[in-house]
Structures are given as structure tokens and as C-alpha cells.
Length: 571
Image 1 (tube, rainbow, N blue to C red):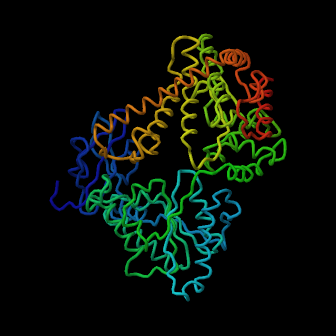
Image 2: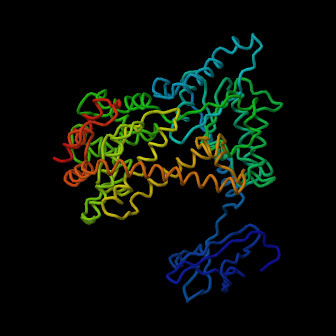
Image 3: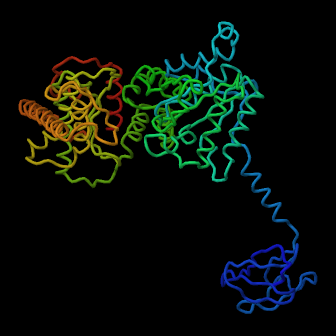
């Protein structure tokens, strides 16, 4: 090798024997070198070794035979490595955000955002801030610099931010928090500076940072554990964001919106007023809001009946669904209709979608033994009988022993939007959860693992009653948050709370035993009918054992919809 050589390169011979690396001592000599070792080929010259197909080309210098006797040839090329590295770093340093202009591009309209009534009222104030700034500044008011949208995934936080930009008719910059976190030192901070520099030039405008927790997690030493390592690249990027939000540089006319579903992981410095002045909570949609969301998505589908006839019933059966869940649900119904070559989407397709999203695919193979099936039937019948006798439980809509990929058997209730949970409601909910286990014990004199999920819910309710809600007479009116790292009470109090939790569950268990014993004939009727039909609706149960002991509000349209599905499934 010459000492004056400047550039280096791997020379590889491609053959059926693999890749071999060689060192080049002259233009006519090759010797084998160790694997993955670079070689010097002159001040500014590089060679790529090719196979024998170039041996007839007089312009190609021929080398001696190399590894396994194959002829090797070198081709001179002049592409600069520095240029390649420049291209690579050009791609890496490219600004990742997207810019939307409502005056030129069609964005989401506020009327297209269903539900979120309270959140929409709050964000519309920001629209007024951008449109009529003078109305507030003449009074001496300081306009909010930003708002943080909080809530579970899929509730429409990003959709709401886009609608705000469209209503205000100002440019909209969209970026994800992870776009600013890089391994290369200073790159994330540079991206933050460039984003806000561009936004100030484009003011008034809106900057939206999605998944803010990826960018603004707690720094080392900030308390609460976790966070970024001290003096790391991520911490440097966060410091730059804090400076841009409330630093010496003026950002007037730039409204910053951000969203996250992990508020507990955010650094406290970014939550203070002057950076994100307001926190807007986007909650799971209520029953009326789910009806609105269904109306938006059902309008786009080709339905057998008018979309209004489906929205209320579907909203009853989809308690706990987010806007994204409802969108996916409607799409599943359309896909099912298409797979069966239907011209329209019917009740049966919607019921398939409900089952598909909640419980998974229906298992069609007859793998369940008859004895196990009887246990499933009595377990679900136990839930139905106890729900029929309790006052403070939600109305029962349907029970089933159909085997799904996610669960075996199900009992569906018309869950209402409850903001205050009374002690009676929680105790009745515990009794309802224990009903299946008690029915198995009384009928078969043994219990199975089928009620494990029910027991988890019962345990959580009992723990909340004792430890969080202060509803236990012996423990008293105390409350402890349950996300603690170190237990904030003594071992003696912990033992007492455990004892009271077990006592409450035991009391509910005995209460359910009494209900099941008194209604054993009704339990047998429901279980046997369930074995025949696999699914029973509210009206089916009412015809078997009479109306519930306590009258409960249940929309007629919901029961009719359920009846249509059961008949369609039976057909």
C-alpha cells in the first residue's frame, strides 16, 4: 500500500461462493485480504471489482485470478464519497412538518366533527382569537399562546385541530413529536427553530404538535422517574421548544396546539401558563355524541334503510367506543356486506361488525364439548337472572354463548353515561359480576376459569370503594390515589383495607347466592333456551321469565334492532 493513498473502498467479488474482499497493490495484482477490510487505491481513484463479463473490454484493466480462480476486473469510477454523504445528510436534515393552507386545500370542517360538544366550544374561542385579535388586545388582554388537547387515543384530537385551522382560515403546520427526536446532535433543536421561524413568517397561523409526549417527556431530575437522560439530544430539543414557546423571540400570531394521551409523562415546564395556557380534555363520546358520530359515517354508506333508523340503536351497543372505533366499525359492516355480495348494508352486517370489533371472529368449528357448552349457558343465564332482579344495573340487551376468538359467551347491557357512581350502583355491579360464578357453583357444584375477567372487575370495584371512594364504614372517609410508587399508608392499614375488600366481595357473593336459589327455575329455563338458540334478546328473556323486577328505561328501537339480528342469524 502507498502512504499517499487518500480514499478507501471495499472491493468485493460476487460469485456463488459468497463475497470476498481483496487488497489492491497495483493495477495488475490482487491478493486476498481479511473479510470487511478497506483498501487504498490512490489519491482520488476508486475501483469496483466486477466479474468476467468485462474481460473482452480493452478499456478495463485486467487483474490476476482471485479467490477460487475466478477472473476479477476493476472499473474506474469518479463519484465522490463526499457528495454521497452530502446527499445523505440532506435527506436527514429535511424538515419533516407539513403545511396546509385552508384557502387552497380542503381541510376538515367543524360541522364534520361530530360529538365533542364541550371541546368544540373551547377551541372555537381560539378561532375568534385569531380572527379578531384587536377585540381582545384593546382591552389589555394577552392572547393564549397555545392549548393542550388531552384524551384517550382515537377521540378526535387531531381532527379537531385541523377543523380549527379551517374555521380560522389560516395556515396549518402539522408535525409529530417523534419527528424532532434524532440521534444526530442538534438536529432536533434545529428542526424546532426552523418550524417556528417559518411559522412567524406565516403568521397568523396554527402549529399542531401531535403526540407531544414523544418530544416533551420529563427530563432527568424532574421528578416522577423516567424521562430523558441528562444533557441528551432529546433534552436539548425540549429546551429549544420551551424557548420558542415562551422565550425572548416574539411569536405573536402563532397559535400552538398539541395533543397527547399521556399527560403524566410531560415535563412540568411545558404545562405552565405562558406556554400552553389552556388544557382541553376530549373525553369518550356520550350516547348522544355517539349518535352524532354514527350519523356522519352512516351517511357515506349504501344502507338498506335510512341511516337515522340505525344510529340510535348502534350507539346503545357501542358504549366505550371512540370516534376511530366507530369509523372502523362502519367500515367492517361495509366489508362484510361486500364479501357476501350484498347490494346494501343491512342489520345483519352491523351486528357482524359489533361482534367482530368487540369479541373477534366467530369460531365456526365445533370444538366446544357439550358439557362445556352447558356451563357457558348457565354462566350467562346467571348474569341474566341477577340483572333481572337488581335495581341499579344497566338494562340487559342480549346474552350469547357463541364462541369468539377473543371470548366465549357474552352479556350485553345498555350502558348509560353515568357521571356519579353511587354506593348502591357499585354494589349491584359487583353482584352482577359474581352471578356467573355463583350459577356454576350451584348447578355443577364446581367453578371454572370462565369468570376470571368478571372477578377482575369485581376486585377493582371493591378496591375503589375501599381505597379511593371512601365508601367503607370501617375504613372511613379516606382516599388514596392508586398510581403511587411507594405505598402512602401503613402496613396495618393495608391489611385492614384488604380485609374489608374481601368482606364486601363475600357479602355480595352471599346476596347473589340467595337470588339464584330463589330463581333456580327461571335459571334453568333461560339456560336451556340459550343452548337451543345460542343468543337471547331482551324480549326473548321477557317471554320466558316475565318482565324485570324493576322497571328500566330501554329504547324500543334498540330491542327491535336486536330482534332483527337474532332472526337474521337464525336464518
